[in-house]
Image 1 (cartoon, helix red, strand yellow):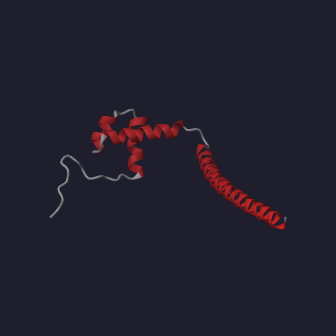
Image 2 (cartoon, rainbow, N blue to C red):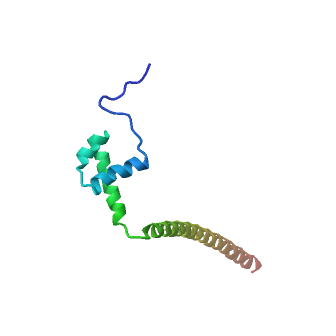
Image 3 (cartoon, rainbow, N blue to C red):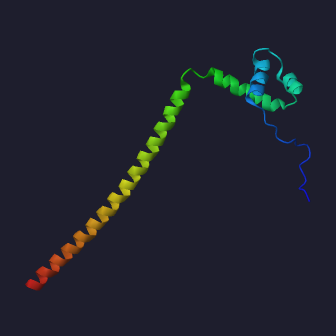
Length: 119
């Protein structure tokens, strides 16, 4: 028995890059209305609108911004690693200080007992 599909929902259609580029070109360069282009291509107007906005945002980005974004990503990863290492070292220092204090107190107590016994 098959599960019932929601009414009014179409199966998701995958569009290739050439189709997407052509649809965006019709709206951006040819000046055609997005509604008409979407209807002519048999696709959702909302999807075409998202494509057009993404294309405009991409065109507005300065040249070389992809390299900067890649460098930013690498620097963020390095920073995250350095912060993790710092946190580990902080914890290790805290543990070392606690152990040192414990052994220092223990040594002081033993010295005190030794002095008390020798008198």
